[in-house]
Length: 210
Length: 210
DNA sequence: GTCTATAGGCGGATAGAC
DNA sequence: GTCTATCCGCCTATAGAC
Image (cartoon, rainbow over all chains, first blue to last red; front, side, top):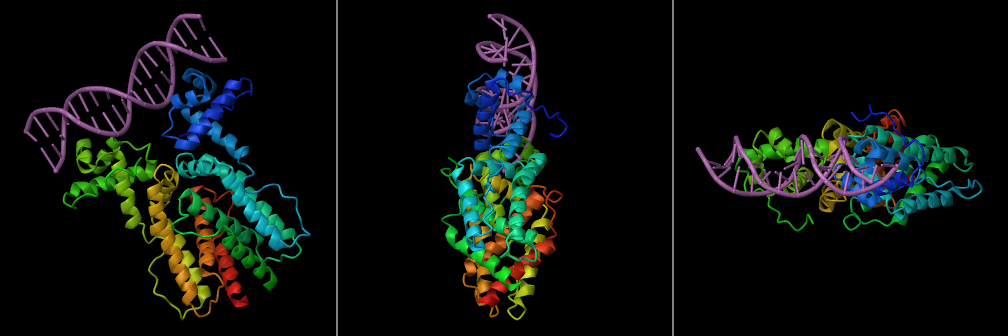
């Protein structure tokens, strides 16, 4: 249903109003999700009238899609993989531990990231194209980078770098989901460092075996 | 806001209507999420009038909470951990592979489970108590069982069974989220068996090292 | 381009008959 | 207990002035 609409990318970055609307829309949509967000509140958050919102974006769905697309390709694009200077000289143990810490740090330090993922997951049924954009821009990117590192690092000889990358990322993302998104910190407590230590050891050990 | 309301569990299983309402509510809420579901449609799906819905449940929020609580404690309680006859004689390799396959099978064969998780994740901001109930009844349970197996299996001597259980479950849940929930199958394809094979090997290898 | 004002409809919740 | 009918507010979207 929502795929049939024309892309309607904002033609120019012309008006600052368009920017304000996207900013206000982000605040509201990330906080309340798609259905629970009203265009009135978006307009107020953006500091413009509702009619102005509709002059820049076709409708609620169009604004939402434009906004999330933008976040997926911009603000949150590199959350899972900060452009790390490839330190092939450093021990993999340290590289992997740092990488895991940076991934979790970036997620937690970007205060809106948790809400962003909530919306992506929650609306993945109604907006499959946004879910796919998330996979392409964020998940796939992080898989590729880690796979790349596993393949090129001389100390690591993994039989399946791709699958190992999935295990690494999956463990960390699930950790974030349970502890933070689902408020599981007090129910199933687990030190971040402890999980990472075990995860890294698992991989290093595997590399030595092969 | 939503925690202050009285529990208002349906006093008795008296009327079959209450059952029909919960059934209809499940259909609607799992398909569209909380905000996008209307009480009119719940009533229609349940085959009763809207007034009858309100005579059994305080309001929309009350129905939603009662419904999700019920799913968390019943229908989907054991999705992540089918009561497996502890086969301590069987090789851990096989036990773990079967366990992983059953976990993913159960998620995928229960057709509403994906929607259920979508709702839990999507509404975890507005309904934190439901997210916590999910963690207690589903995540924690599966951690415990796996930890238990790791601890008691004679062939497995893991230095940190709890953390290893997290890695195991996390890898599989994240796999399900990316491939199925976020429609990533075609973008980042990965054979289920391949991932599981690598995951199991990682753990077995670790056990042998220690 | 941007505003105010409003149309038109749907949604949550209830009154009151039976 | 269950229904029909209805209240009233909020929501999406637009008309028309400036």
